[in-house]
Image 1 (cartoon, rainbow, N blue to C red):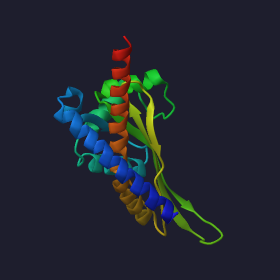
Image 2 (image 1 turned 180 degrees about the horizontal axis):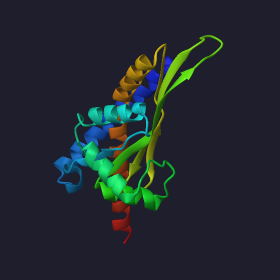
Image 3 (image 1 turned 90 degrees about the horizontal axis):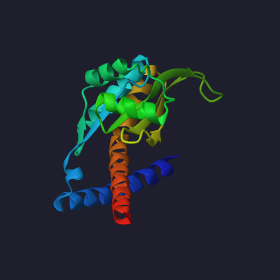
Image 4 (image 1 turned 30 degrees about the horizontal axis):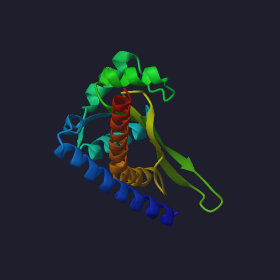
Length: 196
């Protein structure tokens, strides 16, 4: 498991370096679409205290990353409620686009997070904190990335602290997924322009 995480981290770092270089090349070349920071919203990850904390952790860490401009959580919540969004994770493409448009963002994260009491044959009682994170593109309503960080600990508080650390470590991977989605969209536009 540790080896898998190490390999995943190394591949994300290599991907980040390539994506950063391409983004800088695009900016230097006058590509107006890369100069504007991506507007990103983070909705609550469910109607639990764990969900609200996990979303706040994700927002805090994403807000520190270059190239992103985060929508204020209260503004995102109000826009989502105004549209009638109640936390469903089963949206049609149209509903996903409409939700992002109501929030006025390019991408948004939504999901579910909980802390559960568990037991196993090896440990009589432990707690698992997890988050299911969905990264959605407002442009077309598609799912850009899905992630499920989790942590175990003897107490719920410690499990949630470990989950927060997991989310911290994955914030840049979410940013990279957004940058790659932007690159893919630009490439589709280039192909469409040359085909016409």
